[in-house]
Image (cartoon, rainbow, N blue to C red; front, side):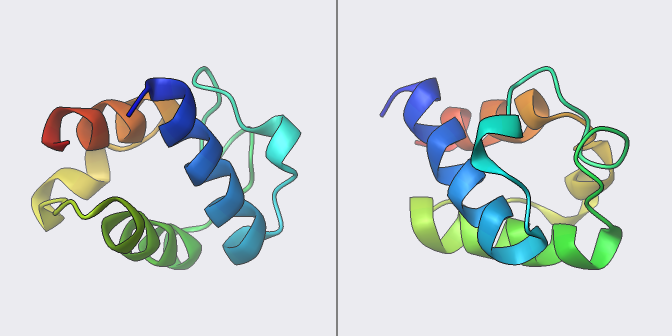
Length: 79
């Protein structure tokens, strides 16, 4: 699976969970500052990413996920 496919999947999840336009999702975007994703929505995004891609994202690492690229890299490493 490519990074682009992971970003596309994340964009779909962000659209469903936080009403973020898929076209706005890019690796250089911040979840909170650029996409207005709050912490509660972020938990839903993480759970959906784990289910969709069959990965496990350790809870202690979740605070480090500030940018779209951070989450994409974590998922990519586990695939």
